[in-house]
Image (cartoon, rainbow, N blue to C red; front, side):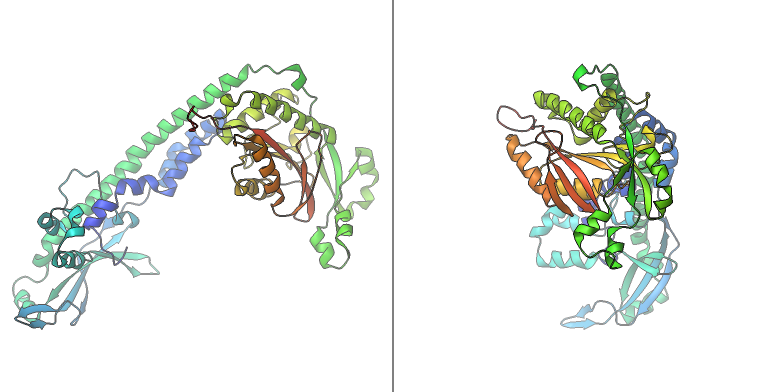
Length: 491
C-alpha cells in the first residue's frame, strides 16, 4: 500500500471501505461466535458479554497530525519540459502528515460518504469520461494516470515506535524554488491538495465509527436474536421427544483400566523393546476391577489409572446410533437439508434421551468435537478425560474424512482408552459409492493399522496408532442424500 498511492480513483472503484470493515476477522469472528452457539445457556453468556466483546473488536480510529517537512531530494523529481527539446532537472520536496491508529483502513474508499470527495485523478476522470474509460484512453492520458497515482503515499517512519506518516511531494525547478521562496513557500501550492486529502480521511474515520459503534452492534444483536429463535424452536422440537422402546438402553458404565505410563516412543528409543509387536504389547490396556486395582497398588509406579466405557456400554451406544441412523435413512427429505451441526444436535438429543444417567446430560455438544462424554459425568471423581468422541462429517472427499480423524478425533483424545465414532454422512445418490469411498479414505488417515468387525453390521472398526497407543474408531456410514428438485438440482 505504501507506494501504490492513496485516495486514488482505483480505491474509489475497487476498494470499498464497507467491504473491508465487514470482512475484518475480529468482526466476522464475533458474528460467527454467535451463530455457532449450541445452547441457550451459551447464548445467554455471549449476550451478557456482548458489550465487552464489541469494545474489544473496536479499533483505534486513524488520527492525522500536522503538516511537516520531510526531506529534500536534489534532482530527485521528474524532468520538466522548459522549451523546445529542453528538459530541466527538478528537486523533490517531500512533506508528511504523521498518522496514528488503525492505518489499514486508509487504503479503502469511504463509499458511504455523502460528501463530494475528489480523488487524485479527479480532473483526469472528468476529462476522459470516468474510470471505465481508462482502458481506451490515449497514451498521454494513461501516462497522466500513472503519474498521479503516487501523489499520496503511506510509509513507516520509525519501525521501533511503529510510527507512520502520509507523504506527498512537489517537484520544483531552481526558478520555481526562487519564486516560491519570496511568495509564501510550499503551503499555498499544496493547500487544496491537502484539503481534499483531509476530507477523504475524515470520511474514512466517520464511516468506521458508524460501523463499529452503530452497524456492528445492531447486526450482532439481530444475529443473536435470530440464533435465540432457532435454539428455542429446536428446544421445543425436542422436549417432547418420545423414544421407541427398542431404543432404550441401560445407563452407561465405566470400567477401570491400567495402562503403561511410558509411551511406545520412549521404550523403543531406550532400547527396552526390540520389536514393534512387543511395543504394542506394552501399551495394551489391562482391565481390572476396583479390588484388583487396589491389590495391585504396589505395582503402579510404571502404570497409570484410566477409565473407559465398558465394552457392553460402547456396543449399546453404537446400536442406538444405528437405530437412529435407520430412522434418518427412512426419512431422507427430513434430514437431507440439514447441516452437520444440526444433525449432531439431533443425534446428541436422541442419545441423551435413550441413555439417561441420573438426570444428567451425558452426551455433550459443547467443546471442540461434535459429541463427547467425559468420565466424571458417569462417575464422580473419575476425572475430566473424554471416554467417548463422535465427529459428524459430510463424506464428500478424502480430505473431509482425514480432517475428521486427524484434526478432530485424534487431536482431542484426552484418555488413553477413549472410544470414538466417525459418523460419515454420505450425500451420494448411490449410497454404496459413499460407503465404499469412506472406508477407503479412512484407511489413508495417519497411523492406520488395520480394520475389524464391530458389534454393528457394516460399521467396521479401524485401528490407528496415535501418540504411542492404538486407538479404535467405529466408521459409521449413514445415507443422507441431498434433497433435489425433479430436474436433479440441489434444493
